[in-house]
Image (cartoon, rainbow, N blue to C red; front, side, top):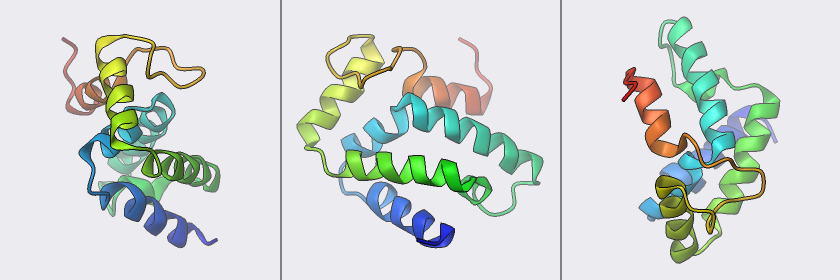
Amino acid sequence: MSPEKIKREIIRLIDENYSTWVKSAFYSDPRVSSILEKLTRAWEDGGRKGIPIDYASREDLEVLLELARRYSSMSEDRARSIVLSRQYGGTAGREEGERGEGGLMGFIKRIIGRKD
């Protein structure tokens, strides 16, 4: 699959998903947050041309696609459980290897420069 097709598939699976819980679970995943943080820096350094995903390596795209497929196929209840667990520091919704720090709110705060 070409990088452009991978980007379109990620956008279709997540950004066009009807469930805000699935979107939140995807974007709060520490691996997604880490990649998006790197892509946002590259996008800003590139004069904010295009969108951040345009700056992704093939490896980043493949990781994002794998995670997009996983999250888009889960139930809304499971996605909600993951999001709330990440937000409130519980362990019930954590995927293997997650630390429980950061999450969606941490990513958003980093983007807008707030340290709270």
